[in-house]
Image 1 (tube, one colour):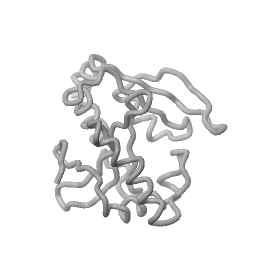
Image 2 (spheres, one colour):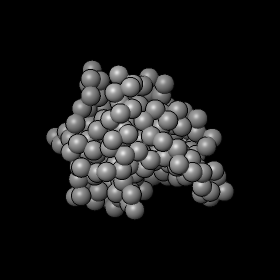
Image 3 (cartoon, one colour):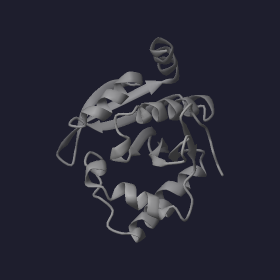
Length: 174
């Protein structure tokens, strides 16, 4: 199993072919995808398409949206990770029943640490719809707000963090 990193409560692994069902289950919940700009997935074929054409190719560059599991019971919680587009983008998505338990913050910190220490990136960006107060709260912990842009008639808060700022904020948070 490809486990790029772990935390006290979580472990991360690469998605692989055959993970269509867990990806579909996560992305077919309207509340989970409400603030993502994506519609809920309609079937396993769409999940497979996203897996094969979007998620898996990122691993070839060392980046990726990694499947996140809870160590205590191997429960699949969702995904978190870094995606290389124009910039290195932090993203996460978890099942509703795991919201409010600190998993997204813990996973985001681990992904940022992995990006700065293992992938040697200099800066990471993130985006959250202004309406998504919970994601904004998480991102405010370790990233800096930069600007608000419009995407599909929605206000989106942009964030970024450099290696130096991240590790400084991590020290203060500890």
